[in-house]
Amino acid sequence: MLRSILAASIAAIAMWATPASAQSADDVEFKLTPYIWIAWPEGDIETEGGGGGNLPPIQANFDDVSLAGMFTGSADARFGRWGVFGDISYYEIEADKNINIIGDVFVSGEFDVSGLKGMLNGYYRVVDDGRYSVDLMAGIHYVQADLDIGIETPNRQLNGSLDEDWWDPVIGVRGDAELTQHFGLEGFAFYGGFGVNSDELYDLFAAANVRFNDMFKASLGWRWFSDKFSGDRLDYETSFSGPLAGLEFTF
Figure 1 (cartoon, rainbow, N blue to C red):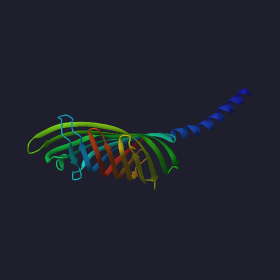
Figure 2: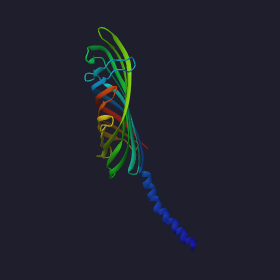
Figure 3: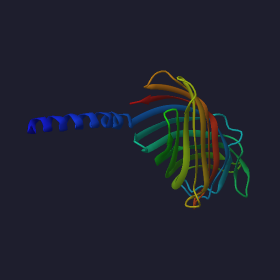
Figure 4: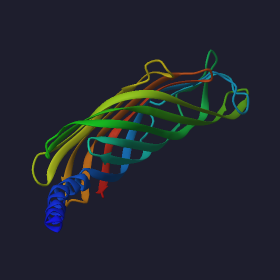
């Protein structure tokens, strides 16, 4: 009798646990997505003086600068409705005109800016019906700016460098829609800064995608990022926008 009860209990537990285990496995997901972002820079960067080489205050305008290369990657880990999303980009731009010493003269030379842009967010999936999902996100955003400056005036030649970085809180929303078995749409929108370091920052992305199978998905879209930061040594009011292509790996 005891053996019968034990066997029945084990069978009942197995029948109850198997769907739950399968569901738990389905609810754990990891994604890795490398991107190429071809971005047009716009805006102004102004140094407050100092830095390596004891530079005077200098302003550079990036509205007429050619394309800036930006290499981007993101990672996503989701456990049920909760998850973590990270994104990082490396950028490099160069200005060789529209440079001037503030209150003085227009100069010739080069004003190079390079660095990292990244963010890390936790999120909660508020909508998930198998074809459509919406995530509410909150986290931190990071910008690093390394400036290398070499300029000439009619009377002197100046060279120097300046490094600055800053962190800001961000909030955002992300959505994904499977329109058919192979085609879909995706995007996110972030806002941050709130005067913590940046006055305000925006990061917007929208794309169409093609899913080849459960593991691979390609996307093509547009991304726009803008940041307005004012520090003791650097004023950074710049945006980047342009097409972005990526290949997502799901595990």
